[in-house]
Image: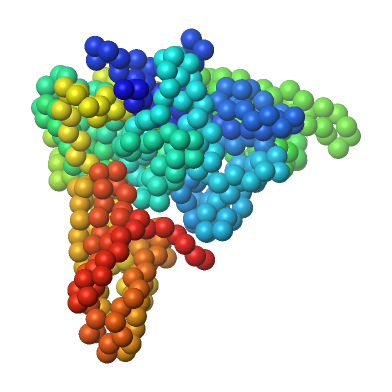
Amino acid sequence: MPPIIGIDLGTTNSCAAIVEGEGQVKLIPYKGGDFTIPSIFAIDEKGHELVGHEAKRQWQLNPKNTVYASKRVIGRAYSSEVVDVMKQVVAYAMRRGDHDDVVLDVAHKTFALSEIAAKILNKIRDVAQDYLGEKVERAVVTVPAYFTDRQRQAVKDAGRLIGLEVVRIINEPTAASLAYGIGKDLHETVLIYDLGGGTFDVSIIEIRGQIFEVKATGGDIFLGGIDFDNAIIGHVLAEFSKSQHLDLSGDPVAMQRIKDLAERSKIDLSTRAEVPFTVPFVTMSAQGMPLNIEMKLSRPLLEELTSGLVDRTMRIVRSVLRDSGLAVGDIDEVMLVGGQTRMPLVQQQLSSFFGKAPSKGVHPDEAVAIGAAIYASSLETGSATKLQLLDVIPMAIGIEAAGERFHKVFQRNAPIPNAKAITATTSYDDQTEVAMRIYQGEAELVTGNELLGDFLFSGLRAAPAGAARIEVVFDVNVEGILTMSARDLETGKQMKTTVRVTQH
Ligand SMILES: Nc1ncnc2c1ncn2[C@@H]1O[C@H](COP(=O)(O)OP(=O)(O)OP(=O)(O)O)[C@@H](O)[C@H]1O
Ligand SMILES: [Mg+2]
């Protein structure tokens, strides 16, 4: 049987792993070296498609045709606020697609976000095939716990586009907890604090031997290392405009150079107190003289610029703890996952809140892929490992009620798989269709939530208002993906569908 690999499809970096023969987990190296592949797709001026390191290498020179961090907007409505914010910070072009989705124009070609994810998945698959010397057709792929149904479906679609069967989607923090707890026969409660490049997730997970039960989860899919970089970029631009009276934000090449250096400086400041920030010949003065950026960044300055971001993560930690019904003292270990957790301020805040230093029990860059591989291997027929993952949905799922109110069918943190039925009826005489709009989120009004799609049940018998009744079943599977089915209670007529955004 060909192997199933585990893939951590990250906002900034992706990583794959596999469990080999005797239960050994191996990260899959790229050309013998790096274990991570930049989640970047580009088309160069010759029209060649580049993915990963090759795409990253030419990023500075070709910012408009280099797509990065696209995971932030995958499965998002074009009309959502996050897309507006994203449009302001990326150099590539984002447009509205036919289904209020986001499409990208790269070198005059149009790509759906699933297609970009597919390019990255395909690269990872190629690397894995080269390494393993056999075909790879199945994978367990991780997503942020805070992904909606629509975002999860988009990742499944990406696999489908390249003939890679995504046998299971699991949540990143849950995967990390597997990497930590597998085979140790633990009985403890861990809090996974996962601050990556693009997203922030917290999950509180009770480990009982081979059972990993998520008690509560929360996050922000728009909070990650990129925002720390942006805080530095904002500061640098403001300083430059103060001293030179020039705005660099409209110059994509200058911006790209600043962005690169901002990230490198941020990383250096995790181990150093101060770093120079120098970009030679960043632009020309009005007199045609070359101008440089020359300044210094210190760790205290970085902390001042980003403390608001760290505070946001801590607020989420507190609310997830509240949701779990546990107290600070009930958390046995705090695990750090994601590159941005290397920032000392993050570790200090967690230490002071929990009264103990976070555990170093997992590798922050590798734990998610390792967990995905462990889970993949447990799914193989004949596997001796009997792993049980009991996960939850991150946000409520429900329908639109009168006055645009959001009627919740499932509350956040509802265990999955899960099914609930509601009875719907007609509201006027001779009505033959019942329509529902399905949303996911925590806002009181549907307008504040993410539209998952429309559900239409037709073919009802013409009857007076309220006489025809249908039973609608909402079924959320183990992957957090919603399927709906409905039955006419009188005629027994049935239908079943995954919910999709179909019109706008
Ligand atoms: N030493 C460091 N100090 C601070 N930040 C760091 C350090 N090393 C890496 N980072 C940051 O971590 C982020 C990448 O983390 P990671 O690879 O875990 O993200 P990802 O898995 O791609 O994203 P996500 O999980 O959000 O989808 C980048 O923003 C990077 O700048
Ligand atoms: Mg990650």
